[in-house]
Image 1: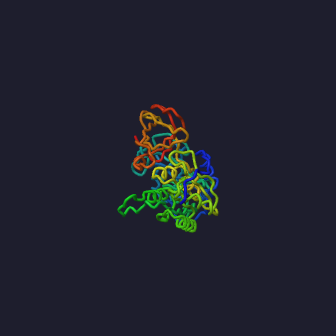
Image 2: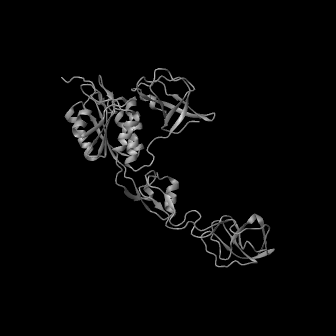
Image 3: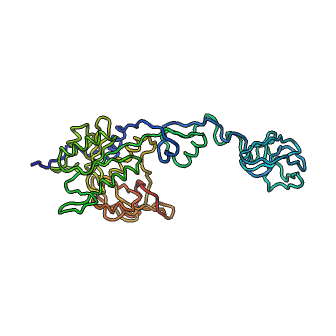
Length: 408
Protein backbone atom coordinates (compact mmCIF):
# COMPACT_ATOMS: atom_id res chain seq x y z
CA UNK A 1 0.00 0.00 0.00
CA UNK A 2 1.31 3.44 -0.93
CA UNK A 3 2.03 5.79 1.96
CA UNK A 4 1.74 9.51 2.45
CA UNK A 5 5.05 11.34 2.45
CA UNK A 6 6.27 14.91 3.08
CA UNK A 7 6.64 17.07 -0.02
CA UNK A 8 10.11 17.37 -1.50
CA UNK A 9 9.26 20.78 -2.92
CA UNK A 10 9.98 24.01 -1.09
CA UNK A 11 7.49 26.86 -0.93
CA UNK A 12 7.89 29.36 -3.77
CA UNK A 13 6.68 32.95 -3.45
CA UNK A 14 3.69 33.94 -5.60
CA UNK A 15 5.64 36.49 -7.65
CA UNK A 16 8.51 34.06 -8.26
CA UNK A 17 6.12 31.30 -9.31
CA UNK A 18 4.32 33.57 -11.76
CA UNK A 19 7.58 34.81 -13.23
CA UNK A 20 8.81 31.23 -13.69
CA UNK A 21 5.61 30.38 -15.56
CA UNK A 22 5.83 33.41 -17.83
CA UNK A 23 9.55 32.81 -18.47
CA UNK A 24 8.69 29.34 -19.81
CA UNK A 25 5.61 30.40 -21.78
CA UNK A 26 6.24 30.94 -25.49
CA UNK A 27 4.17 33.03 -27.88
CA UNK A 28 2.39 30.74 -30.32
CA UNK A 29 2.81 31.11 -34.08
CA UNK A 30 0.22 33.63 -35.33
CA UNK A 31 -2.53 32.92 -37.83
CA UNK A 32 -4.35 35.08 -40.37
CA UNK A 33 -8.11 35.44 -40.06
CA UNK A 34 -10.86 37.56 -41.57
CA UNK A 35 -11.74 40.87 -39.94
CA UNK A 36 -15.21 39.49 -39.20
CA UNK A 37 -13.62 36.88 -36.90
CA UNK A 38 -11.19 39.25 -35.17
CA UNK A 39 -13.22 40.56 -32.22
CA UNK A 40 -11.41 39.81 -28.96
CA UNK A 41 -8.35 38.37 -30.67
CA UNK A 42 -4.79 39.61 -30.07
CA UNK A 43 -3.08 41.45 -32.91
CA UNK A 44 0.18 39.77 -33.94
CA UNK A 45 1.58 42.46 -36.23
CA UNK A 46 2.30 46.17 -36.21
CA UNK A 47 -0.20 48.06 -38.35
CA UNK A 48 0.75 51.34 -40.03
CA UNK A 49 -1.48 53.47 -42.19
CA UNK A 50 -1.17 52.80 -45.92
CA UNK A 51 -3.18 55.89 -46.84
CA UNK A 52 -4.31 59.29 -45.65
CA UNK A 53 -7.57 59.46 -43.68
CA UNK A 54 -9.51 61.41 -44.72
CA UNK A 55 -8.10 61.20 -48.27
CA UNK A 56 -9.18 64.79 -48.98
CA UNK A 57 -9.86 68.06 -47.18
CA UNK A 58 -13.39 67.65 -45.82
CA UNK A 59 -16.05 69.89 -44.33
CA UNK A 60 -16.81 69.26 -40.66
CA UNK A 61 -20.16 71.15 -40.76
CA UNK A 62 -23.13 71.85 -43.00
CA UNK A 63 -22.59 75.26 -44.57
CA UNK A 64 -20.81 76.99 -47.47
CA UNK A 65 -17.31 76.46 -48.85
CA UNK A 66 -15.70 79.85 -49.36
CA UNK A 67 -12.43 81.76 -49.68
CA UNK A 68 -11.70 82.91 -46.11
CA UNK A 69 -10.13 86.22 -47.18
CA UNK A 70 -13.06 87.11 -49.45
CA UNK A 71 -14.76 90.25 -48.10
CA UNK A 72 -17.72 90.21 -50.53
CA UNK A 73 -21.00 91.13 -48.79
CA UNK A 74 -22.80 88.36 -50.68
CA UNK A 75 -21.61 85.54 -52.87
CA UNK A 76 -23.08 83.56 -55.72
CA UNK A 77 -23.92 79.97 -54.78
CA UNK A 78 -22.37 77.83 -57.52
CA UNK A 79 -23.60 74.36 -56.55
CA UNK A 80 -24.26 71.93 -53.70
CA UNK A 81 -21.72 69.28 -52.66
CA UNK A 82 -22.85 66.34 -50.55
CA UNK A 83 -20.82 63.61 -48.83
CA UNK A 84 -19.58 61.12 -51.39
CA UNK A 85 -19.55 63.67 -54.21
CA UNK A 86 -16.69 65.66 -55.68
CA UNK A 87 -17.52 69.26 -56.60
CA UNK A 88 -17.02 70.24 -60.25
CA UNK A 89 -16.78 73.96 -59.53
CA UNK A 90 -13.90 76.20 -58.50
CA UNK A 91 -14.67 78.58 -55.66
CA UNK A 92 -13.24 82.09 -56.10
CA UNK A 93 -13.83 85.48 -54.45
CA UNK A 94 -17.50 86.41 -54.75
CA UNK A 95 -18.66 82.77 -54.95
CA UNK A 96 -19.49 79.92 -52.58
CA UNK A 97 -20.58 76.28 -52.76
CA UNK A 98 -23.22 74.81 -50.49
CA UNK A 99 -21.54 71.84 -48.73
CA UNK A 100 -22.57 69.07 -46.33
CA UNK A 101 -20.65 67.51 -43.45
CA UNK A 102 -18.01 65.08 -44.70
CA UNK A 103 -18.05 66.32 -48.29
CA UNK A 104 -14.75 67.12 -50.06
CA UNK A 105 -13.77 70.80 -50.09
CA UNK A 106 -13.99 72.10 -53.69
CA UNK A 107 -10.91 73.60 -55.38
CA UNK A 108 -10.28 77.21 -54.46
CA UNK A 109 -12.12 77.10 -51.12
CA UNK A 110 -10.08 77.15 -47.93
CA UNK A 111 -12.80 77.45 -45.24
CA UNK A 112 -16.40 76.54 -44.49
CA UNK A 113 -18.89 78.88 -42.85
CA UNK A 114 -21.64 77.24 -40.79
CA UNK A 115 -25.14 77.61 -42.18
CA UNK A 116 -26.16 79.32 -38.92
CA UNK A 117 -23.81 82.21 -39.79
CA UNK A 118 -25.30 82.80 -43.23
CA UNK A 119 -28.45 83.84 -45.04
CA UNK A 120 -29.25 82.60 -48.55
CA UNK A 121 -31.72 84.19 -50.97
CA UNK A 122 -32.10 84.25 -54.76
CA UNK A 123 -29.01 82.14 -55.36
CA UNK A 124 -26.70 84.26 -53.23
CA UNK A 125 -25.44 83.77 -49.69
CA UNK A 126 -24.51 86.44 -47.17
CA UNK A 127 -21.72 85.53 -44.74
CA UNK A 128 -22.18 87.13 -41.33
CA UNK A 129 -18.81 86.38 -39.73
CA UNK A 130 -15.11 86.68 -40.40
CA UNK A 131 -13.40 83.42 -41.26
CA UNK A 132 -9.84 82.16 -40.99
CA UNK A 133 -8.27 79.72 -43.46
CA UNK A 134 -8.93 76.09 -42.45
CA UNK A 135 -11.98 76.92 -40.33
CA UNK A 136 -14.44 73.99 -40.16
CA UNK A 137 -12.18 71.96 -42.45
CA UNK A 138 -10.66 68.59 -41.59
CA UNK A 139 -7.37 68.45 -43.52
CA UNK A 140 -6.36 65.43 -45.58
CA UNK A 141 -4.58 62.93 -43.32
CA UNK A 142 -5.78 64.61 -40.12
CA UNK A 143 -6.98 61.28 -38.68
CA UNK A 144 -4.30 59.04 -40.17
CA UNK A 145 -1.28 59.90 -42.31
CA UNK A 146 0.56 57.51 -44.62
CA UNK A 147 3.16 55.59 -42.61
CA UNK A 148 1.66 56.55 -39.23
CA UNK A 149 1.68 53.76 -36.60
CA UNK A 150 -1.90 52.73 -35.94
CA UNK A 151 -2.00 49.56 -33.81
CA UNK A 152 0.77 47.76 -31.92
CA UNK A 153 1.27 44.02 -31.79
CA UNK A 154 -0.31 42.62 -28.63
CA UNK A 155 -3.36 44.88 -28.87
CA UNK A 156 -6.71 43.26 -28.13
CA UNK A 157 -9.02 43.91 -31.07
CA UNK A 158 -12.24 45.58 -30.00
CA UNK A 159 -14.81 47.58 -31.95
CA UNK A 160 -12.62 50.71 -32.42
CA UNK A 161 -9.61 48.69 -33.55
CA UNK A 162 -11.69 46.69 -36.03
CA UNK A 163 -13.15 49.95 -37.32
CA UNK A 164 -9.65 51.33 -37.87
CA UNK A 165 -8.60 48.23 -39.79
CA UNK A 166 -11.71 48.47 -41.94
CA UNK A 167 -10.94 52.16 -42.60
CA UNK A 168 -7.59 51.08 -44.02
CA UNK A 169 -9.18 48.40 -46.17
CA UNK A 170 -7.75 45.52 -44.13
CA UNK A 171 -10.09 42.57 -44.63
CA UNK A 172 -7.69 40.05 -43.08
CA UNK A 173 -5.45 40.43 -40.06
CA UNK A 174 -2.68 38.45 -38.36
CA UNK A 175 -3.54 37.46 -34.77
CA UNK A 176 -2.15 35.25 -32.04
CA UNK A 177 -3.33 31.67 -32.25
CA UNK A 178 -5.75 30.56 -29.55
CA UNK A 179 -4.13 27.84 -27.41
CA UNK A 180 -5.65 24.38 -27.17
CA UNK A 181 -6.00 23.45 -23.49
CA UNK A 182 -6.64 19.88 -22.30
CA UNK A 183 -8.52 19.66 -18.99
CA UNK A 184 -8.69 16.68 -16.63
CA UNK A 185 -10.20 16.42 -13.17
CA UNK A 186 -8.89 13.59 -10.99
CA UNK A 187 -10.39 11.43 -8.27
CA UNK A 188 -12.35 8.20 -7.80
CA UNK A 189 -15.00 10.20 -5.97
CA UNK A 190 -16.02 12.27 -9.01
CA UNK A 191 -19.05 11.68 -11.20
CA UNK A 192 -20.42 13.76 -14.06
CA UNK A 193 -23.00 16.46 -13.40
CA UNK A 194 -25.64 14.29 -15.08
CA UNK A 195 -25.15 11.47 -12.58
CA UNK A 196 -26.56 10.99 -9.10
CA UNK A 197 -23.61 10.65 -6.69
CA UNK A 198 -23.42 7.38 -4.81
CA UNK A 199 -22.03 6.96 -1.29
CA UNK A 200 -18.83 8.97 -0.90
CA UNK A 201 -19.11 10.47 -4.38
CA UNK A 202 -19.52 14.09 -5.53
CA UNK A 203 -20.25 15.72 -8.88
CA UNK A 204 -17.26 17.15 -10.74
CA UNK A 205 -17.32 20.96 -10.75
CA UNK A 206 -13.66 21.54 -11.60
CA UNK A 207 -13.82 20.20 -15.14
CA UNK A 208 -16.73 22.43 -16.25
CA UNK A 209 -15.43 25.51 -14.40
CA UNK A 210 -11.94 25.14 -15.87
CA UNK A 211 -13.35 24.63 -19.37
CA UNK A 212 -15.33 27.87 -18.95
CA UNK A 213 -12.28 29.70 -17.57
CA UNK A 214 -10.19 28.59 -20.54
CA UNK A 215 -12.81 29.91 -22.97
CA UNK A 216 -12.99 33.23 -21.10
CA UNK A 217 -9.21 33.56 -21.42
CA UNK A 218 -9.37 32.98 -25.17
CA UNK A 219 -8.28 29.33 -25.17
CA UNK A 220 -9.98 26.34 -26.76
CA UNK A 221 -10.70 23.66 -24.13
CA UNK A 222 -10.50 19.92 -24.71
CA UNK A 223 -12.07 17.67 -22.10
CA UNK A 224 -10.03 14.66 -21.01
CA UNK A 225 -12.82 13.66 -18.66
CA UNK A 226 -12.14 12.36 -15.16
CA UNK A 227 -8.89 10.59 -14.42
CA UNK A 228 -9.43 7.85 -11.86
CA UNK A 229 -6.90 7.37 -9.08
CA UNK A 230 -4.82 5.04 -11.18
CA UNK A 231 -1.34 6.16 -12.19
CA UNK A 232 -1.35 4.46 -15.58
CA UNK A 233 -4.76 5.91 -16.49
CA UNK A 234 -3.84 9.44 -15.45
CA UNK A 235 -0.50 9.31 -17.24
CA UNK A 236 -2.16 8.07 -20.42
CA UNK A 237 -4.70 10.89 -20.28
CA UNK A 238 -2.03 13.53 -19.66
CA UNK A 239 0.07 12.16 -22.53
CA UNK A 240 -2.99 12.26 -24.78
CA UNK A 241 -3.62 15.84 -23.71
CA UNK A 242 -0.04 16.84 -24.52
CA UNK A 243 -0.43 15.28 -27.98
CA UNK A 244 -3.55 17.34 -28.69
CA UNK A 245 -2.99 20.60 -26.84
CA UNK A 246 -0.56 23.38 -26.04
CA UNK A 247 -1.41 23.25 -22.32
CA UNK A 248 -2.62 20.54 -19.95
CA UNK A 249 -4.58 21.43 -16.82
CA UNK A 250 -5.31 18.87 -14.15
CA UNK A 251 -7.16 19.41 -10.88
CA UNK A 252 -6.54 17.35 -7.78
CA UNK A 253 -3.87 14.79 -7.05
CA UNK A 254 -1.03 17.24 -6.31
CA UNK A 255 -0.80 17.03 -2.52
CA UNK A 256 1.06 14.40 -0.47
CA UNK A 257 -1.59 11.69 -0.14
CA UNK A 258 -1.12 8.12 -1.30
CA UNK A 259 -3.29 8.84 -4.36
CA UNK A 260 -1.74 12.17 -5.29
CA UNK A 261 -0.15 11.02 -8.52
CA UNK A 262 0.23 14.13 -10.70
CA UNK A 263 3.67 15.28 -9.52
CA UNK A 264 5.38 11.90 -10.15
CA UNK A 265 3.73 11.66 -13.57
CA UNK A 266 4.91 15.14 -14.59
CA UNK A 267 8.39 14.38 -13.27
CA UNK A 268 8.59 11.39 -15.61
CA UNK A 269 7.13 13.20 -18.61
CA UNK A 270 9.02 16.48 -18.33
CA UNK A 271 10.51 18.98 -15.90
CA UNK A 272 8.68 20.15 -12.78
CA UNK A 273 9.69 23.75 -12.03
CA UNK A 274 7.90 24.01 -8.69
CA UNK A 275 5.47 21.92 -6.68
CA UNK A 276 4.32 24.24 -3.88
CA UNK A 277 3.52 27.95 -3.72
CA UNK A 278 3.14 30.22 -0.68
CA UNK A 279 -0.46 31.04 -1.60
CA UNK A 280 -3.78 30.45 0.09
CA UNK A 281 -5.78 28.76 -1.32
CA UNK A 282 -3.69 26.67 -3.71
CA UNK A 283 -0.49 25.71 -1.88
CA UNK A 284 0.23 22.43 -3.78
CA UNK A 285 0.06 24.08 -7.24
CA UNK A 286 2.50 22.37 -9.61
CA UNK A 287 3.98 23.70 -12.86
CA UNK A 288 5.92 21.67 -15.42
CA UNK A 289 7.06 21.88 -19.01
CA UNK A 290 6.99 18.89 -21.32
CA UNK A 291 8.72 19.33 -24.67
CA UNK A 292 7.93 23.05 -24.78
CA UNK A 293 4.33 22.58 -23.70
CA UNK A 294 2.90 23.71 -20.36
CA UNK A 295 1.38 21.50 -17.68
CA UNK A 296 -0.34 22.77 -14.55
CA UNK A 297 -1.33 20.53 -11.67
CA UNK A 298 -3.99 22.59 -9.90
CA UNK A 299 -5.30 21.75 -6.42
CA UNK A 300 -8.55 19.82 -6.20
CA UNK A 301 -10.67 22.04 -3.96
CA UNK A 302 -12.95 24.05 -6.28
CA UNK A 303 -11.94 27.50 -5.01
CA UNK A 304 -8.24 26.59 -5.02
CA UNK A 305 -8.64 25.47 -8.63
CA UNK A 306 -10.21 28.74 -9.80
CA UNK A 307 -7.97 31.05 -7.75
CA UNK A 308 -4.78 29.41 -9.01
CA UNK A 309 -6.16 29.52 -12.55
CA UNK A 310 -6.77 33.27 -12.17
CA UNK A 311 -3.38 34.07 -10.67
CA UNK A 312 -1.14 31.72 -12.65
CA UNK A 313 -2.80 29.99 -15.62
CA UNK A 314 -4.75 32.85 -17.15
CA UNK A 315 -1.63 35.05 -17.62
CA UNK A 316 0.11 32.15 -19.38
CA UNK A 317 -2.82 31.60 -21.74
CA UNK A 318 -2.83 35.30 -22.62
CA UNK A 319 0.92 35.32 -23.24
CA UNK A 320 0.59 32.31 -25.54
CA UNK A 321 -1.73 34.47 -27.66
CA UNK A 322 0.77 37.34 -27.76
CA UNK A 323 -1.13 39.65 -25.40
CA UNK A 324 0.88 42.62 -24.11
CA UNK A 325 -0.96 42.98 -20.80
CA UNK A 326 -1.45 39.54 -19.26
CA UNK A 327 -2.24 40.45 -15.65
CA UNK A 328 -5.56 41.46 -14.16
CA UNK A 329 -5.77 45.14 -13.14
CA UNK A 330 -4.39 45.62 -9.63
CA UNK A 331 -5.96 48.36 -7.52
CA UNK A 332 -5.98 49.62 -3.96
CA UNK A 333 -9.18 48.96 -1.99
CA UNK A 334 -10.40 49.87 1.49
CA UNK A 335 -11.61 46.95 3.60
CA UNK A 336 -15.18 47.24 4.89
CA UNK A 337 -14.52 44.79 7.73
CA UNK A 338 -11.67 43.10 9.57
CA UNK A 339 -9.83 40.34 7.72
CA UNK A 340 -7.83 37.51 9.27
CA UNK A 341 -4.56 36.78 7.37
CA UNK A 342 -2.79 33.49 6.91
CA UNK A 343 0.29 33.30 9.14
CA UNK A 344 2.65 32.08 6.41
CA UNK A 345 1.07 32.50 2.96
CA UNK A 346 -0.25 35.30 0.78
CA UNK A 347 -4.03 34.88 0.75
CA UNK A 348 -6.33 35.74 -2.12
CA UNK A 349 -9.77 36.28 -0.62
CA UNK A 350 -12.83 36.50 -2.84
CA UNK A 351 -14.51 39.88 -2.57
CA UNK A 352 -17.03 42.31 -3.98
CA UNK A 353 -15.35 45.59 -4.95
CA UNK A 354 -17.50 48.69 -5.30
CA UNK A 355 -17.01 52.39 -5.92
CA UNK A 356 -18.42 54.69 -3.25
CA UNK A 357 -17.49 58.12 -1.98
CA UNK A 358 -14.58 58.50 -4.36
CA UNK A 359 -12.83 55.28 -3.36
CA UNK A 360 -12.94 51.53 -3.93
CA UNK A 361 -14.38 49.48 -1.08
CA UNK A 362 -14.08 45.72 -0.68
CA UNK A 363 -16.10 43.16 1.27
CA UNK A 364 -15.40 39.43 1.20
CA UNK A 365 -18.04 36.97 0.03
CA UNK A 366 -18.31 35.18 3.36
CA UNK A 367 -16.57 32.00 4.44
CA UNK A 368 -13.28 31.65 2.53
CA UNK A 369 -12.74 27.90 2.93
CA UNK A 370 -11.37 26.45 -0.30
CA UNK A 371 -14.20 23.96 -0.75
CA UNK A 372 -16.90 26.67 -0.77
CA UNK A 373 -17.38 27.40 -4.48
CA UNK A 374 -20.19 29.81 -3.55
CA UNK A 375 -17.49 32.23 -2.37
CA UNK A 376 -16.52 32.75 -6.03
CA UNK A 377 -20.07 33.51 -7.14
CA UNK A 378 -20.64 37.26 -7.44
CA UNK A 379 -17.02 38.08 -6.62
CA UNK A 380 -15.42 40.68 -8.88
CA UNK A 381 -12.08 40.83 -7.14
CA UNK A 382 -9.44 38.95 -5.18
CA UNK A 383 -8.12 40.95 -2.24
CA UNK A 384 -4.47 40.21 -1.51
CA UNK A 385 -3.79 39.75 2.20
CA UNK A 386 -0.12 39.47 3.11
CA UNK A 387 0.98 36.90 5.76
CA UNK A 388 0.73 37.93 9.38
CA UNK A 389 -0.60 37.16 12.84
CA UNK A 390 -2.71 40.25 13.56
CA UNK A 391 -6.09 40.85 11.97
CA UNK A 392 -6.17 43.48 9.24
CA UNK A 393 -8.69 46.03 10.56
CA UNK A 394 -11.60 47.58 8.68
CA UNK A 395 -10.50 50.77 6.93
CA UNK A 396 -7.13 49.34 5.96
CA UNK A 397 -5.97 49.70 2.35
CA UNK A 398 -4.90 46.51 0.59
CA UNK A 399 -4.26 45.42 -2.99
CA UNK A 400 -6.87 43.62 -5.07
CA UNK A 401 -7.00 41.95 -8.46
CA UNK A 402 -10.08 43.02 -10.39
CA UNK A 403 -11.64 39.98 -12.02
CA UNK A 404 -14.88 41.68 -13.07
CA UNK A 405 -16.64 45.00 -13.39
CA UNK A 406 -16.54 47.28 -10.34
CA UNK A 407 -19.93 47.67 -8.65
CA UNK A 408 -21.45 51.06 -7.95
